[in-house]
Image 1 (tube, rainbow, N blue to C red):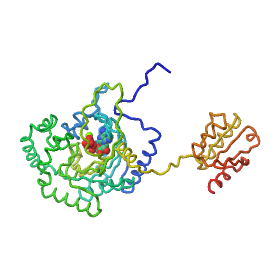
Image 2: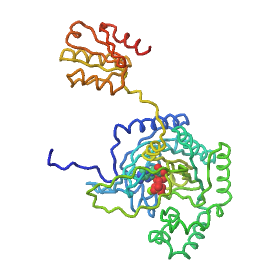
Image 3: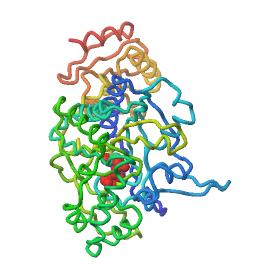
Image 4: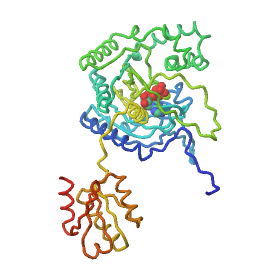
Length: 447
Ligand code: ATP
Ligand code: MG
């Protein structure tokens, strides 16, 4: 053994190993197909952005900006950030590339890694992946309902049942100030009971109290004023219509008067989709040499898979014209974990080999390599292990791969231009000419 210590991955960051790849591939395939059906076009934006993009959009007094963002200064002196989410980046790209003059609605979707210095725990990582949609230019309630419907469709398409859609409206610039005042007054009188963080939130960004995961604070805000009582006519009407659409599509929704999002740019509709019953997720492992002490774990508020809402102010806030927009993001790691916990099946991988090529000796290996490529070109995936010399070892691999046939080429067969075809279940072998082998194997695979 080498004396060198094995380097470990960064805390909260994970490798996505081969056994997990089929789940990732399946989810990607499902969502990309659905988004395309609904007229969404894919966009990829850089992982690094000017830090200012997130400071301006997400809001300074938010968990993400205050505690969770990875920011650094480049050699040239620029302040950059690893993106903690993608909506701000998509809006930046939308404006920078003149998409605001495209015929609207402009509908975009994305998929990629995000970075947040969160406290690692079940379903919470420091590098995680999100995919999501952003629809620009449609202010109607139908647009909110459509994106919500899409989220439900894809979750149902993955096989999830017992989905709960929590929904609320947080009003807009016209009616929110009245609500905030009432809300502040309510908490001021209960200031002493709040957690330290919420005492601060009361001064900086009072709505963030609703995002708190401490039980003591959650108990207090059960009696707090509700957004819905403060909505003006426009916002009330918008929300009512969204609900009517959800009734129409029989979506399993629940009005949650205290739902807010952890980001400042939302207006009107906010929503989350979670699983009704959440089986325990595998807890993220603490690294043994971890110097950072893990803090007390926050209360689990259920496993939110998808979160989103309307953000009519963001495009304008980032320097563009006033543009209505609505979207959501889903966490891939949480989806994969939940799929496994609920034993949701994914289709068998097409990349599984159908046959195995075994060979003995250098001459046979050369023939086998050519044959492998010929099979591949004809759409038949073959397994092979050119490094092995023992036929027994190769047959063991073939067995593990669960192939129907193994094609054995020894020195004699290579010279005679023949192949031994072994049916794995019965062990019956026959010698067949190499010429026309593709057709012969195709025929046998079909029968
Ligand atoms: P929370 O309140 O649980 O921290 P959030 O408001 O930060 O959630 P969003 O920013 O709305 O979450 O992200 C949308 C989705 O992305 C979440 O519902 C979740 O599936 C996923 N997600 C967010 N943060 C993480 C993380 N640290 N690790 C894994 N997935 C995450
Ligand atoms: Mg968070």
